[in-house]
Image (cartoon, rainbow, N blue to C red; front, side, top):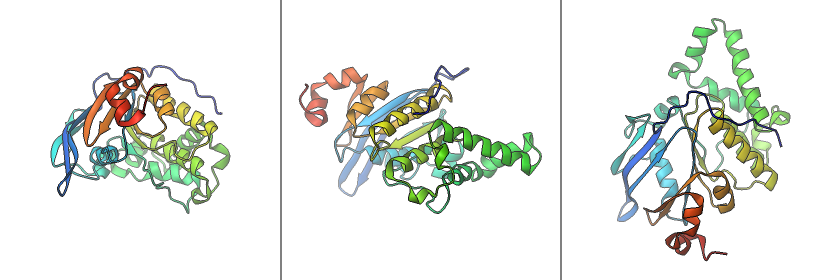
Length: 269
């Protein structure tokens, strides 16, 4: 496993970076989400758990701008972004992974991370860098250095030249995380990040998430069915069931909640 130093990010803001209030979504006569809210602060890892059909992925779709809610609002750094597009949110620091991998399979691992920096254009990526580095060559060096640093942090350095489409599931998911965190991330939404990973890869995944929160000040919200992984990594957990918020609290409090055990975790011990 690649060693990653952790520690508090200097000058981190303490106000919420992401807020959702009163989120409601209907699919015909089915109420997928009903008045759901949550708050996420910089440097925090929050878990979102619940049984299949609880509304977790639907909430991710609302937070990332893929789906507009029927009720409620989403705030990013205090600004109402409920009607903003996924591209706008990404340019302002929101990143997301999906249950189905969304890598550029015909590009190398390194090129996937380079693309993640290039596409932002006038939103703060290339344009901002060219102000500080007036030549394209200097910009390219900076961009490649960022990619190389993130690859090292994720234990992917040896795979930099491999085509992303050839990687096994666990490594591909790590590449998705590296791409999400390579530049300017304020909020990272991880949908089933540990799925298909070995125990060693899950250990590396934990280290990288903690690097994003402790060193870069990112806020991380993750959906994951690996309960042990969630309980170990998250400082706070939100539990959804049938489109409503069933419980919220520390891992210990959530694990001990009888309603959560009945709906999702099963009997204690």
